Length: 290
Image 1 (cartoon, rainbow, N blue to C red):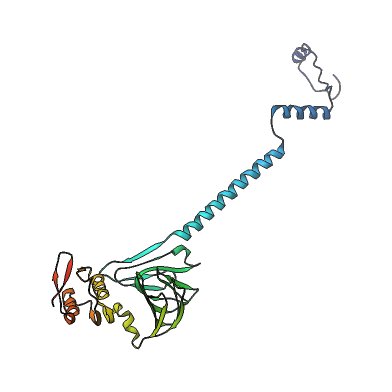
Image 2 (spheres, rainbow, N blue to C red):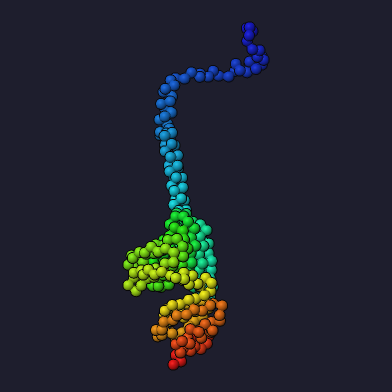
């Protein structure tokens, strides 16, 4: 046994000597082996590593597109989602807007606004009559079918029923625009803008500004008001139906309190014209007593 040669069991050595000789020499160079491997990969249809990068890039684009779709959907939701507040017949409702502005709704009035879009656009859609106390900030708009009121921070009353439109400023400054004619007025405290039959706005000064929104205190004041409009207000405040007044063309000046019973109010309103009324299932019927 040579020096440093590892010791091998004699019987094990005899068994190893019986195994056939194996030639492990390589006949191809490293470059030839790599070229063959590349040809095999191409033949098998497996894409090279660059395609993996492309596939990953496609996934990133899909993720980005999904994020954009979610963002657009969120913006669309914020832009379209609307909150409505309604004051039913016979009731007054106070609503607070997202910026702390307050709106008091008269009977038979509705407002609508977009709470999630409010920081971008303070806009209220109105049908009926409401008193606004607006906190200072960006432009605040009240839109109705007949006109638009724009302010920065002020107190004002808007009456917008059908083609009747009237804005009264209690403090600050208000810009009023008539939709039909485009006529615009800027009014200040104690001034009132009223839409006339021609579609223009008429400016007037109010000696007693509180009368313009006396409904907040359950008082209703009329000066030269068509009698049918007075009956309409009684219907809203008492949630009753008044019939038989369509052909009446009287003008009424007077006032009443919502704390009085409906029948008492009707007697007071009808008496100057010799009119009478009778109780029916849903309310009252006006009859000509003359």
